[in-house]
Length: 355
Image (tube, rainbow, N blue to C red; front, side, top):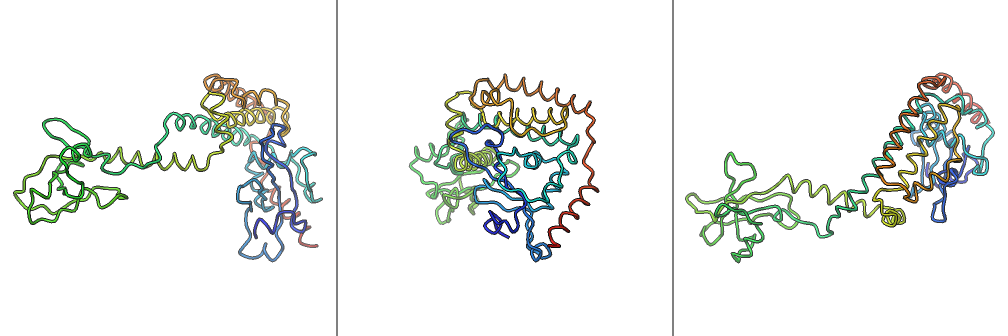
């Protein structure tokens, strides 16, 4: 099945809700409208090979979970799925009668400490990771192997490109020979000093990821020694790829907001960190999932960058200790009853497909 065959199709739809910031009451004029839901595929798809766990549009703003996958994630106390089960009434777009059989209290357990707090810690890492990218941008023009090579002469090393320019040599006029027992160290020869030999150049081309060796006649005299800092080149390639993938995929509105508040962390990620921790504490104490946030003012202050990263980390640490203690005292079961959840799934599917 495809997203198009599920979206707004009352023949398969069981639950359709507005989710995310609009369900939390934290949306702004720039907020997207996220849609989440649950579907039951036609019987022919259910029995066949093409039954999907979930379907989504290209941006993942609209996602629908197959009924069995939905129950499976409820058993794991997945935060997004528990929120969907507890969607505020004004965000409910459609609800099939069979969904009344799925009770929130049947799935809440102490697993929420791990799922909600673990997800919150992921948001902290994402928020702090932006700092490195802001202060360590990687130039668009990609460096190549020769930018990490150095020529040694007279007890000093100089960038290979600088030495080649001073000598009036081209990299393609040179050849390298490995020096035994010396990692990434090579003897460098120039064509003018090796008559009759065919040197292959320092690299095979602009897109090469390593140096290139040549066959050097015996007794040939090298120009000197060249080293290739291969480890630094590998790290650079990784940083270059990750940085420009981030630039391509980043949310420009959130990025500009980060620059404007000047705290150099992703404030939206930090806001969701506290939302998740607050919700976890409420689950432990109240045995319910409060999707619509009563702590909206505080969360929007976090989003607006009213706190330093250090202040937020202190508050996160204190909140983690508070939530952990709340779950240790909670009367919630250690985990949901998987057997009862399976029986419920069988009953719901039987009702749906018997029609």
